[in-house]
Image (spheres, rainbow, N blue to C red):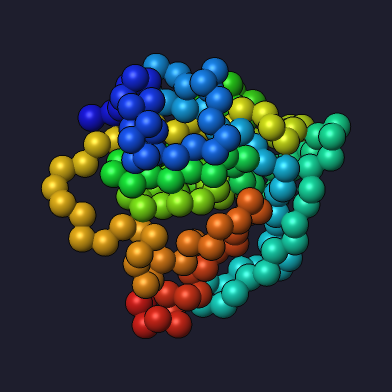
Amino acid sequence: MILTDLKILEEISAGNIVIEPFRRECLGSNSYDVHLGSKLAVYRDRVLDAKKHNPIQNIEIPHDGYILQPDQFYLGVTSEYTEAHSHVPFLEGKSSIGRLGIDIHATAGKGDIGFCNHWTLEISVKQPVRVYAGMPIGQLIYFTVEGSLNTPYSKKSSAKYNSRSDAPMESMMFKNADMGLW
């Protein structure tokens, strides 16, 4: 079941959902609009290695925008910090963004109960497009879950994205190899 606007507000009041900053005008009928933060990142190396740390180069989006190119993969970040303590958050692109040829996530649209952070976006474009810090970029949808939870994401020893950051976070896949998870 997807939460409605009134249920999202109820869960925010109860502390089960946190959105900072929260703006009432961004609340849709069953979703909350999130915005592009002021930072992008690109990988420094053209060839990435899943078993190694792949460093990134940060880019500050200028006031007059930044042109994304189709031959480049970008990491972005939401300006909103969110927490989900009893619902599964899903991040989806807005239709207006899709109609500009912008994909905001390749595979990681689902969050976990206990995820507390800004969302890193996996951005690719079909043709050059100028983007701006603060522009609507996606929407969060919250799902109810059935059953008890053993360990929220924020308490998992294997969680790799718990450090609060308003900058895009590069892949931490290499930590899976370090932990013997493959």
